[in-house]
Image 1 (cartoon, rainbow, N blue to C red):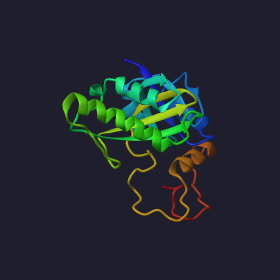
Image 2 (image 1 turned 180 degrees about the horizontal axis):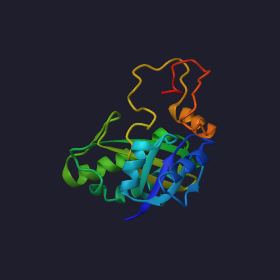
Image 3 (image 1 turned 30 degrees about the horizontal axis):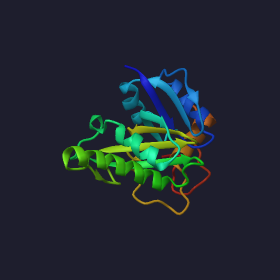
Image 4 (image 1 turned 90 degrees about the vertical axis):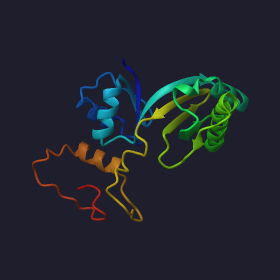
Length: 206
């Protein structure tokens, strides 16, 4: 069954990401600000998490609503059936991005959403899931623009440019998403020699 999939990237790289998606047969891509979306399936999510290089994370939207104050936000989150996503023995984290005159602090939005989720579990089961920043069982992504709030499951976990090859980061590292996109934009054919004039920590050739 197909559903909306949202892929986040860096500002200005939306067209690069769209072009990379076409290599996997994905069409009808809608470009937004630092993201693209399309209708896809679970196989797409697994495949793209493995192979995309111009993406930061891959999101599966689960809930959206209109909201203009903290009371409404808490109530809307509390009304959602979180048993479909979590149980009281699991852990979760929340990352929020906020562009709204109604809310001016992303951390506060995350806190209110966390309160509503744990209160629902506590009231129904007497036990609540735990907040865990590193390696949670479920990672929630919140995008709040004006009065539109969208919650998504982050299928990538850590950002996709954190692929575990680098143990230590230099003072001014080149983001791997930007590095990969630069190579894609160069139309390098992967047969001719690759020359890196930037020295540094070798992000481009890696």
